[in-house]
Image 1 (cartoon, rainbow, N blue to C red):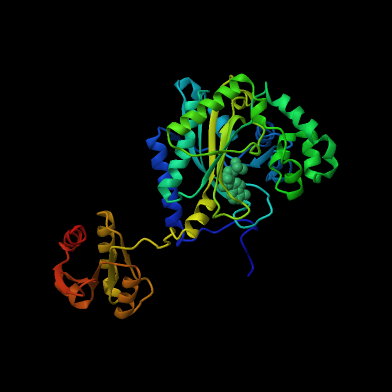
Image 2: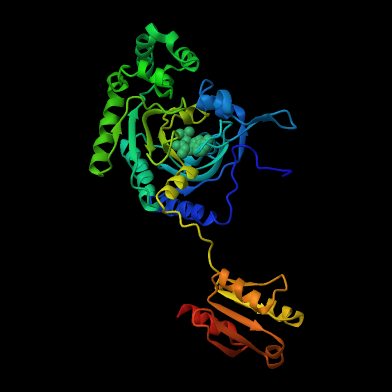
Length: 421
Ligand code: AMP
């Protein structure tokens, strides 16, 4: 093979796109029900947008971004996540002027130079929402409820919601110091990455996947105990709302999420049907991000859910019926003379909302019937020498195998009647 798809990317083939569409359409219709509007942002942005917002010392920014210099000498980056671009668009287009909370959703590819494995790719796809303009914990509850509702709606019910608060610029520095103090005696036993994190971004030590680091940090101080009054009240209110909505969750003090911009609420949705990469999606509050990106101080909260991982779980659960859509009508042309009237018939059928297919490979009648069966056609319309001479078509009901002759002018109406009956 001369060419292969780039490592860590996938071809989503026609057998699979119906499932992808089902997932995306479910998300779209739920977003609509919850009052979110679609936004689409460019595939690439100024590199600086991601470096500033996500934080220089995060894994994604320090080693996973697809960054290149364009022909004008600018550093640009394929978007590694969806939030910063949406917030950039919110600020740049002054969406705040519309008043109220801006409730936005997106469906986007993301690009991260990660080591590919099951459930982890270099181009992945996310469904996300961002709700910008309120710090009320009721909005956190709505965003989480929407994510949970989405999974229920596509058929994934065995999952867990993991919740934490990562504090704010008032209380997080205090916790950061407490955590450093706790880790100081054994910092040299931590993995290399955690030793850097210890200096630069100590909270990230908490979600290191290495056994040794996990064990050493097992009894780390609880961030919840360090929250300032405001953050604690926010967290308590959110918990009570989730309880009232019957949304179950577990609090995990080790959940910190990957990016620096998170404040207060952090959450992740995990499934045991996934392997090591067990997060279906996650999100959190980012009350400083709009300001960081150049807008007025404006709070916000959002999430991103991985489409590939949802699909892995659906397959695992046997809920991924991967069948192509069927075609209503097959038009069989017998002989070159019949090709033009067959094309006209196809056009009439399609223009009146009926899906229709024909043969382009000069198959025999038998071959065309086989093809019609394979496409799942309910009806075949046959055009041969006799039909042409008489201005009729032969209509075959593919289920009952009955055949009859109908006038060519009335064929489309007859087909429509049969299909709706
Ligand atoms: P994150 O914001 O990094 O937590 O990403 C949110 C979700 O997107 C994750 O929980 C995954 O489901 C999905 N995701 C992120 N990165 C990848 C990747 N490299 N490959 C596949 N899915 C991903």
